[in-house]
Length: 217
Image (cartoon, rainbow, N blue to C red; front, side, top):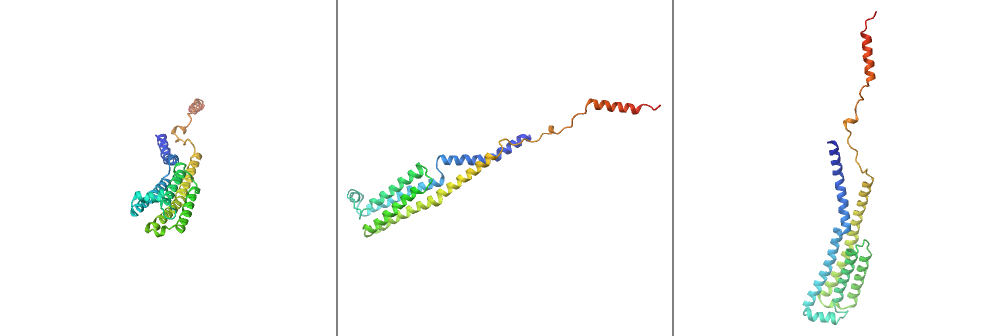
């Protein structure tokens, strides 16, 4: 009974730790929750910029006519098509780096944010977007803000949290490696016993009794 209780206690103590290790190893094989959130925001970036660009096409005279002007007759000074392509570039690069390749460094987001920032600054300064109404302000500003939010998410949320999870995993694994594989069993009552008296001792005691009982002459 005691051995069953001790084995059950050992199983209870080891089960949560092993479950945490298995869950962490499962996340390493697929993708962590915080990284999944980052990838969803990158997808939102592309969809939101695309939606704004489609609205801009409708406002300025219809989708077909504006697509012909902005895509087929592309003009750097007046077209919003390059801002849409910039969002596609950010999406493709970041999803490939942080979802497919599962990169754990900031250099990919640094490249996309630097290219986005430089291109938008030059676009606003050189082109004539600001004279085209509200979308001339809205699309560059939204693209700029989304790119820097992605940088903040990765640098301050994704990478630190994953590094902390890995440190905790290694510490738990080291603790398990240092623990003994077999738990000491309970001490049975059979280990404490008195050895039986030998037959020689019993015979000597009987002789002594007989000597005492003999009458003294």
